[in-house]
Length: 524
Image (cartoon, rainbow, N blue to C red; front, side, top):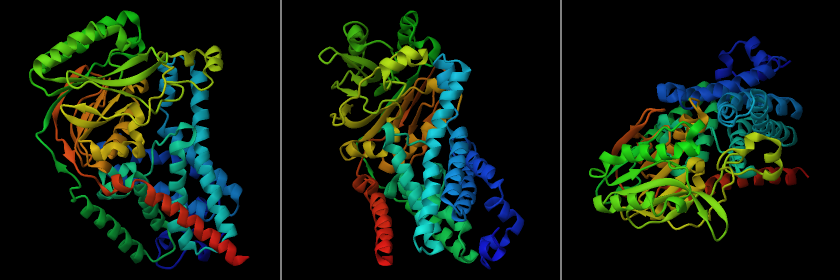
């Protein structure tokens, strides 16, 4: 059991915490359950909670700080591993609980199977934080680091490194990164400079300052400087307007996922989108339909349904952008795609597919074992990573489908040549859960990082227009058939983050590893 002298430093924030409470958090067997609890609290800082009240964004610092306190006092790698794993189970157990809805409600899986698959996914994701806990204790044991260097630098670096690994490992799942809640705070000013990973580092640094063994005054001064600088950076305009604003109409059909792919429903869906768009052709520059709005291959409707839409678009000089499945008869593969009708037509094929949703690893085996993996359109192929930008009303546009907009490194690749962004999504798979709100928060961060306005059209919400600061210009309600209208402003210019991407963060990883290597050589 640690003494008060070990736990506290006179004048630090820890000196105001009762000894018994500190020992409970750090050393008591119940501290393992507290790790689970701290993780479960963390999603409350994300959407939808911080959209109800921005104060929820600041909640992230307290469970994070207390978890970091546990790691910094963990005595064995085993303790660090299990506390990290329990923290991750709590975090993802609450944060991605929506996966159960997709598997059970729309995948037609029994509740036991849905629960098992969701639990396995959560357990796997939690291993990232188990590795984090193990690594923190390992570094503490094997290197003579100053405690402040461990808490204020190495723990944040390892955390961000694990977020970065989670982005690409097994196709990647960059969901619920620590920097996302900051879009509601002054710290959002850092996003156009350092991106989401840099923002996560700042969040971890501030959380570490809450538990660092330094005088409280120093912590307050550093926090004030960090927040004040962020507030100043928010005032900088990183891009400039090009041309006139475009009038946009986004059609949200809200077709029930349970019947959307039914052949009988197809004609009704076509009539619904045509009817909702009828009064928009004369008044808008662009009409936008969501991902797979009409769930039928393009070539089957090209000379009938889409030909009529093309004629209407050219007649009114209004372009139509829609998501749709496309079959390539040359490769005998089909794609989740996006096209524009009425102007210079082009196609974009989705590159980041959803595992077990749009494609199934080991598909021939799993499809024969479980009916869930036979969901409609679950055999898409990936598009090329170097596709030509689609032009909308004469402006080159960065396009993304579904959760592709959570991959910041991919989005920024074509930003310098683009004038705005467009994302078509179908969050209907997740019902009335956290998922649509969390996804929209990430989409807003892409607009902020790139200083580009965003058109976001979805099947059932959240449909919205977002400005270059990540602020919502207009949005529609969920689960209603509605047309959301507004204007976006094409823009030019690049942010520092678009210019250098994640290289500064990768350099931080390299320098942290290099210093540990130098310490090891020096000891030898």
